[in-house]
Length: 128
Image (cartoon, rainbow, N blue to C red; front, top):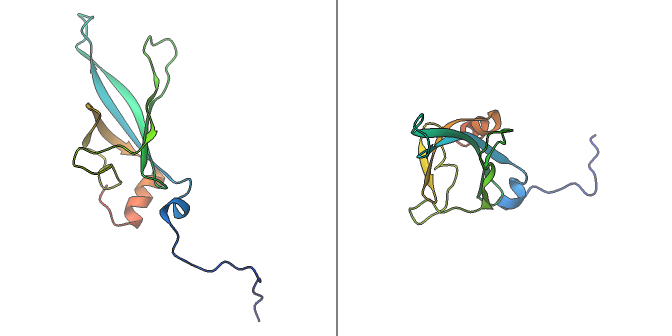
């Protein structure tokens, strides 16, 4: 005989904000920035991390800080829902490795992602 707790939760359909609470898809990307003040280089490559929050469909783009680089770094884009240029917002189906996305006029090339993101795509039958 198995014991069942009185307050055992019943399985229900949960809203996305509850089902995906604190779940984040992490992509690694870069963008090219033109350099006009230097005769040595034409552009510089700046690495960044794109975070997609599953609970509300928002994006957060940040650039890791490098000491003594002389560049302004940190949060490039604060967390909010970002339009993808087609009248909709960015979603997991728009963010894949090897593609270039345009966020407010800046083009980001997505190069890779973390293990949780790969597992999420596999679990949901999406191409990465």
